[in-house]
Image (cartoon, rainbow over all chains, first blue to last red; front, top):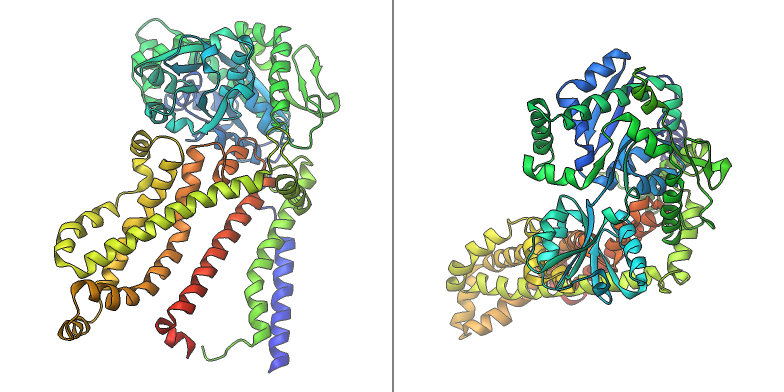
Length: 362
Length: 269
């Protein structure tokens, strides 16, 4: 009997070990190969609202059909989670800022290409203080913001303008979902946040906006990025996405009834009304035409901006604990210039697809 | 159902699921690493060991603190305060509701309703009323845990045999004496059991509160590192939290058996 038990246990263990080692990957990275179905994730932000609208109004399907693809556009409620999901390989593309592209997928070894330069924040991110006149008054205060986010970047850029250091303040990591409620509490006297929360926060009594992203134009960019390998194997995906984008934002810009209807739908999708949405658009520098986007992305300024961004990321350990220099990760620009390690390029700005849109070659 | 595992195989069988999970993790991690040497999602065990060494035994580059210990101290303080106050509330109100019909008719429905409010839903209100500091975090734990404890203990007190209370009264005991000498000792084991069950929810509320607004704590670190997918630190943190909760549970179980052995006579047999 005892022997039998031992035998039973031994067989059980062997079976288990065999099963485990034979089992395929449960969470596999995005497989690079020719494929037909693609998943794009988006989160609510004024500059990204064209995506759900395009999906709802059939523009996505129209362009996907043209190239014989299926493109699923999925909303993720949590911004960081959407990037993490993309990095883990669950999505082929995601809407993300330039800084988070560098720190999450690129630092995680997922080669990522920005194919659409959608807009840059031109006042959509800001610092708001209670009972204060200028940014210098922030000294010694506790600052509520999403730590290590673009808000943090904006704040360090702002602090430099008034000769302050991060040591002069105390950062309290605060969820973006709760920052409005947080600012209502009397012990919160300084916040850094983005829209739509920024508008709510500015409206509080005694609140003064003291610094915003219009003072660092072009540094906080909102992109659509896709997995570089997937793009290489499926260039049609890039073409379809760019096609969808410029058709949709042409509608968004339209001054007539069609444009108003589109903006109204986008406003609703983002949980606000037309007036609120248009107010946020005012502080967003949208690149409505592919020509403008190509021009901005190809400019020499961009590599200077990315140098500031990667310096911030490196100084805050965002590129990884073991990374010894800000050059560890390569960032490639349309001109062919590479910032950082040429052998380890993980973030690429690619204007070729936007150019096709500009040249009407889609 | 009558075949019992022997001593040795019992240990083996208990370990089996853990070994299995570890095996799955290691193979999956190796597979992802083979495809992307910078993969951060499932870091190999060696990297997690490095990360633990870094957060536990080396001062942080920026703040100079031993991160794991300062986080643990801050979190445990919040948890101990929250769970401790909730336990006191649970015991006093539970006892009062269970023993005194007047208190019961006044408070029982209120507690019933309060215990049904999801604490996370009232979080903005907690912030505005209690601020963003330590207080609101402790209050969130109390709010999440205390009503359930009150209900459970009131129930336990109310379930004592009526004859017992009548007998105590015929022997001349006052209400106070009955509450303290008859009811209290009998619901104490139940209190400890309930608190053991509440360790899980208490941690949930603690981590949630720290995720929303904090500058130190276990939950704070996890949600901060999530921003750049540093799973090599997050996974050990999760294991550490589990271990802490497990130890608390074990200590409470031992305490209950030591001080209130009468409640565990069946178990001993």
